[in-house]
Image 1 (cartoon, rainbow, N blue to C red):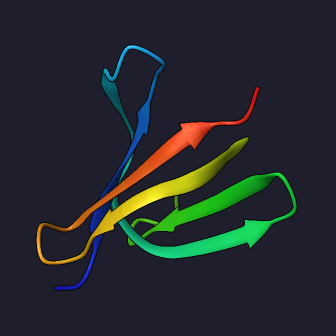
Image 2: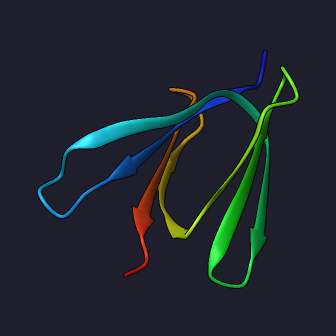
Length: 64
């Protein structure tokens, strides 16, 4: 399986799970659209900070 869990990191470095089992990441201007294998979809105002593909983790940081 190639899905990843997506986390949003705050200014203190704390990570919060945004969506699990994500298989699609769609960047769109100042936001990122995430879609998982269960057809759940979330839009987050953020940018990609780090991708750990072997660990199946994507770290986003908020745009504010």
